[in-house]
Image (cartoon, rainbow, N blue to C red; front, side):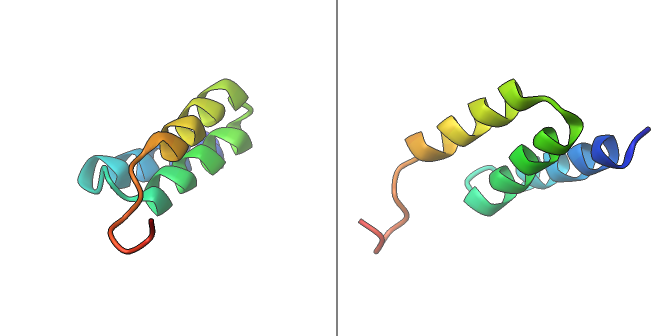
Length: 58
């Protein structure tokens, strides 16, 4: 298992615990970039952009 694979597992767990966390999702996307999976990273980042704005940030 590479460091990127380990990071993906940790960040995926973090996202499962905090699914509305933009930071958790962005960290997972970065881990996918490190692993070379740019398509999955791009899909996650698109999902972040499509999320509703947090209260007070509209």
